[in-house]
Image (cartoon, one colour):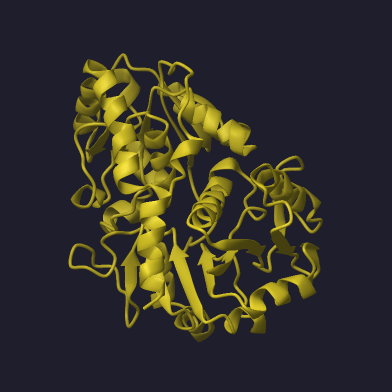
Length: 372
């Protein structure tokens, strides 16, 4: 198939966000499909050098090119600036590509426009990476927002419980298919020895969906005293209150520093001992079944993961390599379990990545639904 894929690499030019789109592109290409990346959000980009939103898209467009070029995708992208100017491939080239494209995949609002060339593609799907937030926003949204989602043939979500009795999140007339972030497994193994710290990359509070849900800060405060109860060291790559966290025994670094590029983000994960991950309050409270694309990368790198349960444990194995917790006591027990037989948990982590998140498996299933 010929696939147009929309993502948010320039909007959020950080390693974790970039890997999300890149692994779709690489995974689809490995299955024999032709891919083209488009970004058309109507928003300005974030420039981390200036630490501001910028009407000049040069940082974002350069970042897209530098991220995709090493994988042979240097001429397979176009960025539409907020003012309608195309960067990378020109507007006419995008229209030519779309003219006989078979599938349009929109990840996380990589396009908020229904340009004629997108609308004419026979199959159109949206992938929701913010389950519960997205559905709550639709439930209270203005008609244009609802109509936006109505134009897709299929809707997918990383929330495995969305639309099931396990979660009370309203879905209205929409059907949400469960999917996971695809992981290109060959990108993550490493020979480097693991460090001594449980780590994660996180944002304390997100800037979107502020009127429909709660953030990680609401959950993390429940675990803020964890370092005082264990000898296990932690390191948080965080966009948040570093002074407060350090006062409670957490080692911190700036999330933007470890996420500046694909390689920086991957190296941070690979040098970790394991992940300790807390979820956003909305994911937990509504039992969305959300599972983190970041955690998948830890597992693919052979790093065990100890992550808060949002309901995902009903869909994925928990206990070896990947462990769920719902209280500080459970988190401490998980730390002890990983440390008591680290080699077994590391080995199982990689196996779970292959069994459940391998791009070939995830994308084959997604495409089967798309063809219906």
